[in-house]
Amino acid sequence: MCLWQFQAAALRDYARKQGKTPWLVIRVDLTSVAKCGKKLPYLRTYNGIHGIHLVVMHVSLGKLSFPMGCEIYDPASTATPIDHAVRLLSRMHPYHWGGFEHLVVMDAGFYSADVLDLLNWWGFTHVSIGAKANLRLRDGRKLRDAKQAEAVELDSLPGTTFYVAWVTLPRDGKRRRFYTLSTTRATAITLTSRHKRRWLIESFFKSAKHDFGLQETRLRTKQAILNWLLLVWLSTSLALFTQALHDKTKTKSPAWRLTLAQAAESIRDYLMPHWRSLRALISSAKCPLASRRFALIIEHGRGV
Image (cartoon, rainbow, N blue to C red; front, side):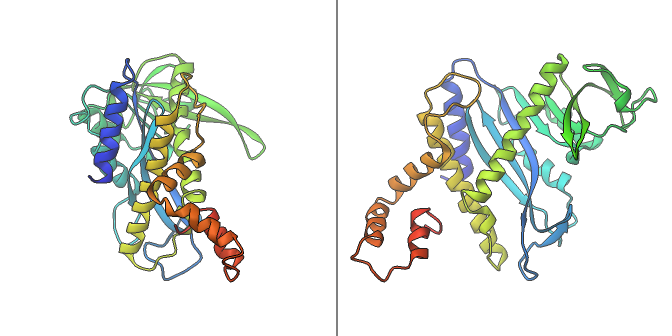
């Protein structure tokens, strides 16, 4: 069974056990793995970062979440990050995922009138996307002139109604507004609350890079990098699945019985039962030639 099939089956089974089916929240965002080399595949400088840039789709249903696809922003290709986002979202087409309420959440970097029109045509009825304050409305105003929860039409996409919301956050010592457009009517509080669900993908990026080795990519062939990405997504997915299985809380915010690190350790011990004895051997006097560096590698699971 491939990783995608496992993830899809796990999400559907999890939904059946929830009673009232929670929303299927689909996040798409770009993350960068900074690299200093010049000969690695897929390297490019984007947003001031030199490295490998990934457009990732992260899907959650209730407390169960998975990275369900990524595409490399390849300098050898003409595809843009928005093109990659569309290809990823097509995998979650409502036709194949009937019975769920879909919420697609993206930041302003993926704003495109054509993409919003396409998502509407595909049947994604709930879309929340970041937008710039100077976006022109059909009545001649700018987005910054709209009121909270006001219904507006975009100059670039007439005939489609969006609802405006914003949140004010500190940036560079100042207070700055970040705007969102939603295809679903709701209060301003609800609209901003829905868009805040996007931040779970940022937590996933941090964990994938620093806990599961995404930042350690140093391979020199395209296939090797693709294989490494698969291993990172697989190990992360197994840890997230184990964490959700052991969760006993009923609160909306995660109050996990197992942390993600503990869930990863549980999976490691299950798949590699010899690991415990190997660690004990290295730390004992029976293995005096083992270097401290190797012992630390085994201790933290890197390269295992």
